[in-house]
Length: 150
Image 1 (cartoon, rainbow, N blue to C red):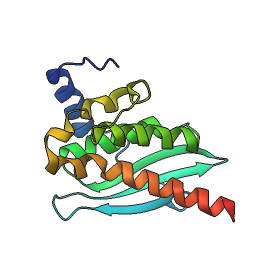
Image 2: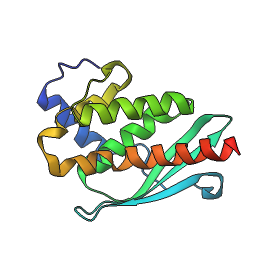
Image 3: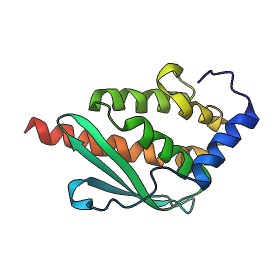
């Protein structure tokens, strides 16, 4: 997705992932997923992120709960970008995403639709919303990597 995407198209992508999220559900077999609850004291965000991890890869990713437009859309997009990727690939995507959000140099090539959050830094109150799913996915993968080292 080109970085020159226009604001109207950005809003359309965000609204699509909010109104019809592909990955918003509790898995049928939650015991085969690692999970983390993420919430915010400054927004309605209260979600549980589920990752199915196997052999160093994210097999499936989803989330459920109540969340604002930005949290729902960003978490849905990041779940989509994580599925089928190795832990290292997912962590790279998440780090590039965080760099973009915090106005640091980043590689837009790995972000695909997540690039629609490139202007989030202009609304400081929305940064936590845009990173709640990112932080949860990262924490789950970090814990899994630590567990595998033991």
